[in-house]
Amino acid sequence: MQHSLSGQVVLVTGAARGIGEHTARLAAARGAKVVLAGLEPDRLAAVAADLDAPWFLCDVTDQTSLAAAVEGAVAAHGRLDAVVANAGVASRGTVATGDIEALVRTVEVNLIGVMRTAAAVMPHLIASRGYLLIVASAASFAALPGMAPYCASKAGVEHFGNALRLEVAHHGVRVGTAHPSWIDTDLVRDAQDDMPAFRETLRRLPPPLGSTTSVQRCAAAFVAGIEHRRRKVFVPRSVAVVYWLRTFVNSRLSELVVERQARASVPAMEEQVRSLRRGFGASTAPGLPAPPQPAEPGFIADRYHRR
Image (cartoon, rainbow, N blue to C red; front, side, top):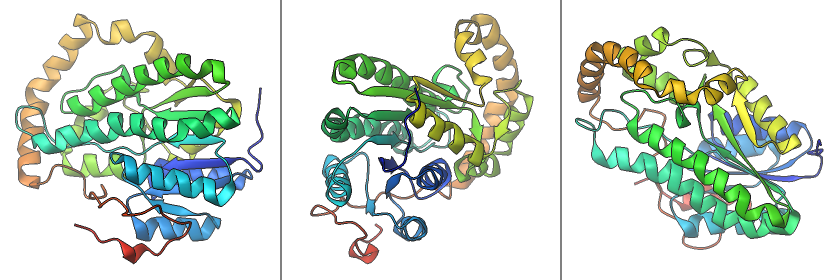
């Protein structure tokens, strides 16, 4: 069953760039009243100006910050019909050599941030019998060396979504998980620029795990997922094959193949990360202090300052 987005209120986290930005733009083009949340005020303000949409500084690891954004969205439009829990980061380095705070922060944003987002929006989605799309990844069921925190967080996100779906079904709320492979975003480009060994690893992967999809195509899949309230969204669609073959993908036989490549790629990646002297990509937004009071639609960005 398809639900028209015309007049529907859609909140998108991580909306300043990449998948979040393009999903918000396409949803707005389909008639949705979008609300933007994220950590980059200049970019959020620019996107919001294009879409005539309210926007909020929002750290998904801070419940006060999330509550302010959700309250602001409801104040602006009176309801919430759909939410895209998209905010996410990817740290640099292995568990043995990486910055542990960056590794832990990845789990906090990608998994704990999704939990906090779901808790903040659920009363409003129950009221509207709405839809929550949680952005997981193909990494939910396909592990790669150098991505342990990211893979762990996205596997957790998938199963969190599976359990949450059962919890809220009797309220008429639908929950979907999205599983994109590599999308042509700043996050993925930064990883390849920072770690040439990582780029080479991707080149060796079979499709769809080694393929890159345009961010526009990904956004189209997400918006279609919202319109149809889909349980699973795969980008590209062939990722569904990996999902159904996950037992084989995670078998000892598959591990042996990856281990053979990892003997050379992991030491090279670790050395490249050491030279970076940072735990995240250049485009990853730094943490911002939580808003001290409930935010209002279109508030002035310079009320908050980067650390």
